[in-house]
Image 1 (cartoon, rainbow, N blue to C red):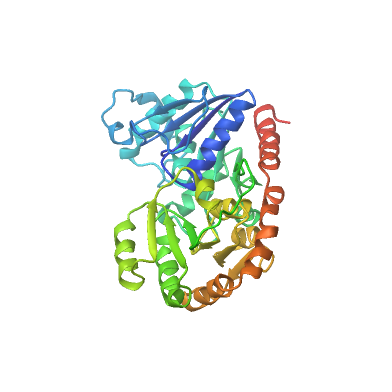
Image 2: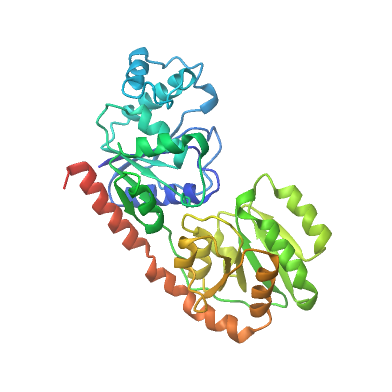
Length: 379
């Protein structure tokens, strides 16, 4: 089967990680894979791709001037969408070039990732009869995409399927007329069981993109509140993003010498194998890749209640704690309850790796196999 994946870039991020994992897994299964990115440029992917995965970057900034614009394709794109406000004249060159690039791969199916990229792909492939699967990676019950909200509802009714990582998200799209499937993210577990090495200092770890919705500042403030009571603990922040410098300044002000920024890592298990406790302060998650990975490594998780996906991953009182209400005081109290209680942490840690069976890679891939067969062959 020829499968073309489309995503904005393959830089660090949860959707990007899932896209790469799917490409690698499907290549190993004998499918022919192409990944089209819009703005990767000459940068290497953040996560390794298997030999045999073809990758091409289209260069978003070059689209308006490239000579691949096909006027007949542009006219076709407008047909059926005129008057909806979905397609503007400035978008036609980009959509036409995207259409050309996708069709050049002769796909049996196209799997697009992330909301606005999904919409571009749907519009670009209008009337081509190429089946499209649109993958959502965030909790759309909690966030909006502004003026694209209504067009998305309309366009998602035209795709073969919308895949969401949790039933609550899939049902939300289903209520708006889309054909939906709930498939957990495809994540590879650690190759070997976690072995905690003896060390003098304890590590509270977070793995997150440093963007506003992740609220890493909350983790810093909550840790600073209790840090004097736990002098043998440090907070380590793994990730990159536009808030990196401002978060560094905050940490230096409220918890000097106790918060360490490690930058982006493409080896989360190496980091997590050294962790004593994991904290998630995101206020929205589509699945929670880093939470899954922490649990897989036997690290108990303290997570703010950010919706149904996190409540499915973290079993409150079994392998972690769900924190309510959302705020510094509640998070600080939850962290302190485990940082100061080795027995409680070890009890939660013992059950954490069960996530490997509860949300297994093989189960997710089997669901994908069934969906691809249904979409491509009509079974």
